[in-house]
Amino acid sequence: MHYPNHTIFVFEYRPEYLYVFVKGEYDLYAISRQYWQEVADACKENGVKKVLVEEDIAELVSMSDMFRLVSELGQIGFTGIKVAFVDRQLDHASLNELGILVGINRGLIGKAFSNQRDAVEWLMSSRKTQAPCLRMSVTLARTNVRAMENVKRTMENAGS
Picture 1: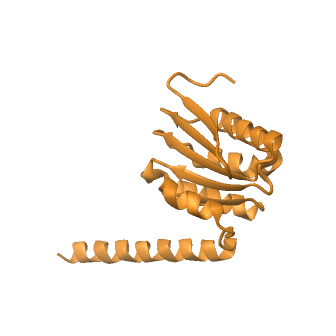
Picture 2: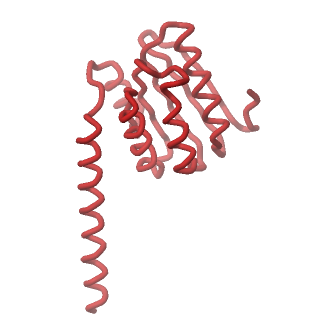
Picture 3: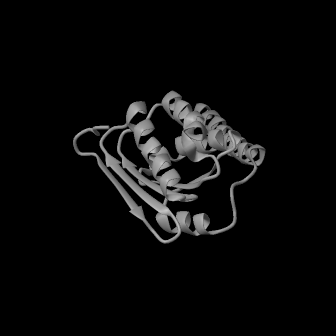
């Protein structure tokens, strides 16, 4: 596939895993689907069972495109492959966590990170991921705490 101008796509075979770096200005379903397919193909061709994907794409993909893509990862070859995902765009963290949850619920092994060091440590460990129901409970608990804090601030501001 031809990638958009200013898109960097690098494969690096490291001793125990495949490292993939993707940098670009914007993201679309077709672009992501193609590069994830290329990663899956490389894993299959080379017997790779661990992958670290580091992404630096300024634009945030839509939630529906992310859901669609992650839902297809098992079908394109990621079943049984442990994937550590690093997004250099820290404001993408909540969408990445949702993507990981979708993947786990479909039997994939993955976790999102904000830095490469933690990602490599997890990738090289025997740990997989939290159970989906536990991760969802933690996420919902965090969401409920934030919601309650927002309600409290709103009420305090209304009273002043």
